[in-house]
Amino acid sequence: MTRVSTQIPTLEQLHALNPVQQPTYADTDLLNRVTAELRKRPPLVFAGECDELRGKLADVAAGRAFILQGGDCAETFDTGTAIDIRGKLRVLLSMAVVLTYAAQVPVVKLGRLAGQYAKPRSNDTETRGGVVLPAYRGDAVNGLDFTEQSRRHDPNRLMEVYNHSAATLNLIRAFVTGGFADLRAVHSWNQDFVRNSGVEVRYESMADEIERALAFMVACGVDKEAFRTVDFYSSHEALVLPYEHAMTRIDSRTDTPYNTSAHMVWIGERTRQVDGAHVQFARHLRNPIGVKIGPSMTGDEVVALADALDPQHEPGRLTLISRMGAGKVRTALPPLVRAVEATGRSVAWVCDPMHGNTFETANGYKTRAFSQVVDEMNGFFDVHEELGTWPGGVHMELTGDDVTECVGGVADALAEADLPNRYETACDPRLNRNQSLELAFLIAERLTDGRIKRTNPVQEYRVEDF
Ligand SMILES: O=C[C@H](O)[C@H](O)COP(=O)(O)O
Ligand SMILES: C=C(OP(=O)(O)O)C(=O)O
Image 1 (cartoon, rainbow, N blue to C red):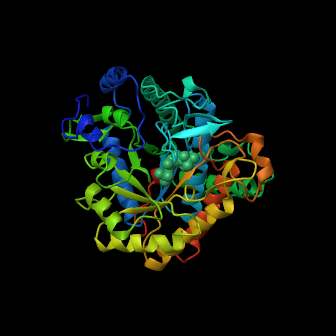
Image 2 (cartoon, helix red, strand yellow; image 1 turned 60 degrees about the vertical axis):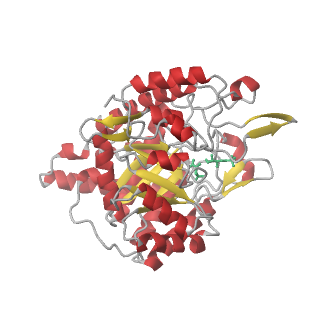
C-alpha cells in the first residue's frame, strides 16, 4: 500500500473547493516537501483492519453492539508519554468492561488517539492583554504557547504528527496484545484509583464478579489465551487535508483508497458541508467514516450527507455522531433520525454529549458540567427509545488522569473553584477517570433498564468483543 492515490481528488482540486479550518502556510515549498516525505512513509494502519472495523460498526448499526469512542480533545506532542497513553487506554478498557459486563453488549473500542492533533476553532485569533495572535489549532498546526513564533503555522509539524501517531499506535498495539488488556487483569487497571470513591467500590465488586466468571469459564475448558487480547481501533478528525491526503494510499488487495492515518476518521461539525472539501475527500475513502451533526442540521442536509458518504447503503460505513447540547437533543435529533432511517440505510447513531455543552466559568475556564453531559446522553437514549432505533454508542473527551476540567461528578463533585487545581487540557475540558467510569455505569444502567429494545440481540458472544 505505498502507491499515491489516483482515485481521490488531488490536493489542488480540494484546495479549489476553499476548504475551511485549514492552516495557512507561508512556505508552500516546505509544505510540499513534507507531504512528499509523508507519502513515502509506511501506513499507520492496514486496510484490512479498517474493513474489520467496518464489519463491527455494521453490528452496531444493526443494534448488536455499542461504540465506545474516547480520548483527549487534543493530543499533544509533549503529553504523549507511555504513562499518559496507558492511562487513557486503561480508562477506556475499564469503561468497556463496565458496558460489556453490566449491559451485556459487545463494545467496539475506538480511541480518539494516535492522530487527534488538529482542532477546528470558532475564531482564527486569540487576544490576550491586547495582543492578537493566531488561535491554537492543535499541535499538528501550531504551538499552544502564546508567542508569535509558537502560533505560526508550521508544515514540519505534520511529520511530527506522523511520528507521534506511529509511536502511540505502536504502544497501544503492544498493550492490547501483550497482556496489559488481559481481562484477568481487570483489577489492576484501577489499582491506583482514588480509593473509597463510590465508583471505585462499584468497579472493584464488578471486577471480582468478572474474575470469578472467567475462572469458571477456564474451568469449563475455555482457552484462557482467549482473554489475553482485545480489539482496539484508532480514530481522529480528518481536518488538515494535506496530512490526510498524504496518508491516503491505494490498497493493493482492492485497488481502492484508504486513509492509512487511522482506522476511522470523522468529519467535524464545522467542516461537514456536503460540497465542501472534507466531504468530497472522505467520500472516496474506504475507511468507516464518522460525521458530527449539530443542532442546526436539517433532515434534508443529513440525508444529502449520507447520500454523499454512503451511496451504497453499506452497513458500518457511516457513523452519525450527534452533538446537540442537553437542551436541544430531544427536539433536534428525532427529525434527523427519522430522515436517515426513511432512506432505508443502516447507520450507527452515536452520542457526543461533550461538544454541545461547553461554557466558560466566571473565573475564565472553559468547562462542561457532568450533569449536562449525562442529560444529553439520557436525551439521546430517550429519542432512540421513542423511535425504536438503536442508540449505538458514545463519543467522549476524557483522560485517564484525575484532572479538574469538567465540573460535577458523583465521586469528585468538582466545583468551579476546583478547576485551577489540575486544568491541563490543550483545548476543551475532558472528563477525568472517575467521571468517565461514572458515565459508563450510567450508560450501562440505561442499556439494561428495559426501556431500550434490542432489535437484534447478539447471537454469538465472542470473547474479543469485551
Ligand atoms: O474540540 C472542539 C473544538 O475544536 C473546540 O470546541 C473549539 O473551541 P473554540 O470555540 O474555543 O474555538
Ligand atoms: C471539534 C470537535 O467536535 P465538533 O466537530 O463536534 O465540534 C471534536 O470532536 O474535537
